Length: 204
Image 1 (cartoon, rainbow, N blue to C red):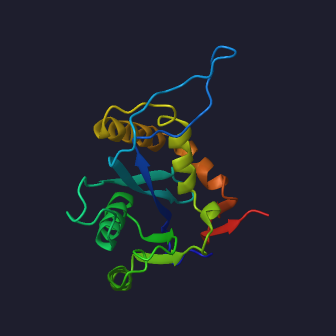
Image 2 (cartoon, rainbow, N blue to C red; image 1 turned 90 degrees about the horizontal axis):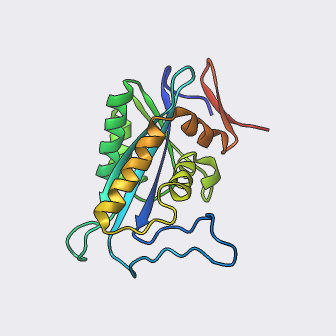
C-alpha cells in the first residue's frame, strides 16, 4: 500500500478489554507444587484501551492510547468507544505527531460509522484504510496486547479497578519508552516500511 499523504505517519489502531481476572502465564515454582494466584470472582470492573502504533521511516515509532472505564450499572451510558471517541483519539494523534495520518484499522462497525467517514472526508490530513476481515495478524497493536498480557498483567491479583488501571498505564508507558518494542510488533506482522516513496508491504 502506498501512503497517500507525503510525510504521513502510518498509524495502526486496535482496541482490547481488560478485566480484574489476570491472564495465566508461566513462572517458576517448587517441583511438584503448582503456583496459584488467588483472585476475586467475576467482576464488572473492566477497562478498554484503544491504542495506536505510529510509524514513519527515519523516526522513532510511537504508541498513543486512550483508556475507557466500564460503568457498573447498565443503562448509564455507552459502555464502549463511540465513533466520536475514535475521532478524538485520531485528532490527538495528529496533534502529537504533527503530520498527516494514514489510519489503518479493522472493520468494526463504529469505525465505519457515517460520522467517522464524514470527518475523514472533510480533513485532508486523514486517510483511512480498512484491514481485511479477520486479519488481526496484520495489526501490530495486537503485539502490544500480547506484551501487556505476558508482562505486567500476568499472574497479578488486582485489588480493585484502580490497581488494574495503574498496571495498564505503567505497562503502556514502558512500551512507549521502548520504540524497539513497537518496531518489534510491526515486524511480527511481516509488514515492513520503506523509504521514499513511503510504502508498507508484506515480507515474502
